[in-house]
Image (cartoon, rainbow, N blue to C red; front, side, top):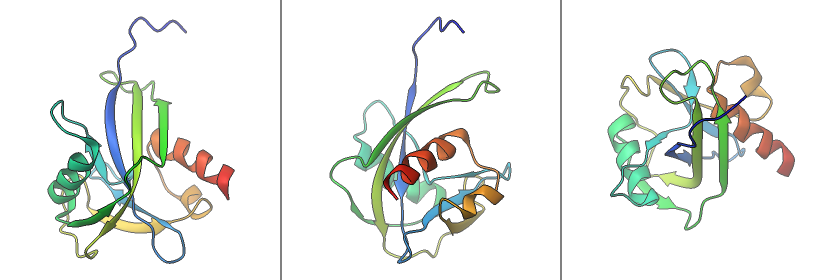
Length: 137
C-alpha cells in the first residue's frame, strides 16, 4: 500500500490505573471504547492537553501526570476517510476522583485489563496499546 502523505494528528491519552492495574476506558456515543484524552492542539504541551481533555470530556480533575510518556503507538484505521493513521502518546495519570459527568465522548467508564478487553469493541489505538502492555506483563 502506498502512503502518499505522512500526516498524523497526535492524540494524548491518559492511562488511569486502579489498584488491580486495570486501565480506565470510556465508552463513546458510537459505543466504541477508548482511553480518555484527545487531540493535541498546536499551542499545547501534552500535559496541558490531558488536563483539558479530561475536564472537557469527563469533568475530571487531573492531580498527577507522569513527566514522560509511557507509550507511543501508531495505528492504521483504514475505514477512517479523514484520518486513517493515528499517533497516540500515553501518559500515566491520576485524577482527584472518578465522579465523571457523561458526555458524547464519555458516556460510561470502566476498568479493563488485557484479558477482559477482548469482550468489548475498542478503537485500533487501544488494541495496539494492549499489545504493548502484554509485552511487559
